[in-house]
Image (cartoon, rainbow, N blue to C red; front, top):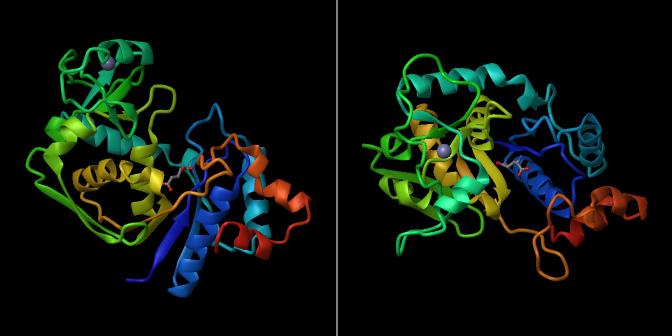
Length: 282
Ligand code: GLU
Ligand code: ZN
């Protein structure tokens, strides 16, 4: 199978050193394997995505010496695929509407059962308040968030596994049933977006025939959710390469708002792409 990987930034701010590392690593791996490097614009969050940030992404990556085939997949063009997938899950009875606010969830989880994990890949593990509250027949509601009923979703899945070649190379095996407590009922369609990172990333990686997902270690736990979705949609599980995170001088990982580490600033300071590679340890 020919190697295909991707870099999937969100155009919601400047690319920083962490993005440069991730993109260059994926690009280098594709070159070494004589494979393909794809770019995907993850712009489902319409309230934060800006055309100017997208333009800056192309500019910065080009400056770093990267090339990618056109056309570039943009998640904002993919709503029909997301809707079809949500309809399929809805008709299988695996989704339910949730109207809880963040404050509702925080209040409901403030008195946890002893030993129950509180935090999953998406933050507080949903306490299940809205589960079983609506009869989920009829058309799929569009005016509420939709959560995956994890208990139903993982029934009969047994063991899920994936190949990891990044930080801790190994074959990982997880008991699907454990995700009921370690992940819980994650949101697959946000009310304001009509989709979610988890749903879109799984469908898009499959649509782009990605064989190796290169991304930061911070998404390692999210991969568990992605394995469940791949199984539900009968999609192949790619290999994963979760890489180390680039940290600032205080050892904190860089965030989007870390404009001080923006690639564009290094460019303006006259640093060349080769030097930038050295800065991120490539
Ligand atoms: N848009 C996501 C991010 O910026 C991509 C994550 C992924 O590669 O799966 O973190
Ligand atoms: Zn709810």
